[in-house]
Length: 316
Image (cartoon, rainbow, N blue to C red):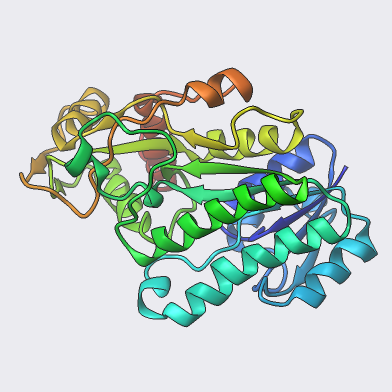
């Protein structure tokens, strides 16, 4: 199968490209940077990386997207490109053109060339701080974005549903919760990466807004499930929530960390942060996509040991 991966040099995109190559697919990475990113070079041996076709392009450019699909006889699209935090909060026109218009360009190009299945990167930001308002029970198909990034993803969610209903498409939204793992060095999750790195090195760490809840998914689980969503037969569910099965407040996160290394001091401040996620079920993903995420303890242990190995420290 010939895959087009937009955002293929980014964080999740790099893992998706790696895992598609492992499955024997042809991969075209379509992204703003030219050539392979440092993360791709870290994840993929040079002899395999040479198999990837890199196209330097912008999702705002419909003509280039269409030409890429046509010239390369693309069979399947995984759309991961978007305007991320903090850029999208500072530059609203850029966010609209990149995330909203760019996603529409992908949907339209897929429709024009008869590709019914598109799998795209949704976000838990569409849920925002509904935990503060509704508690742990979240009605189906409800959104309340807490920032402009979440607002752009919310519109894309509705747009995907519109294409499915009115144009015979089969677009699947994979709604990532907090994705963590090696290589997350930009966007809002970069703060969490630095937090985990400090913990790995034995430095004291602090958790702000301890009453707020977050749900987590390791990047490798996000990648493999995204690919699975792109390959399965038509699903009953069109918007899948991906996390390890529950959400954690600051004290619960600290308990997981202390199980890994009780010696590191974890300071927790009370109060609410910007987000307070309710407990959203992952049953549809587990039943329809065979989603089997690793536990937060296992994922964090692997992430922590990644930093410890870099610094010649023994693993936990």
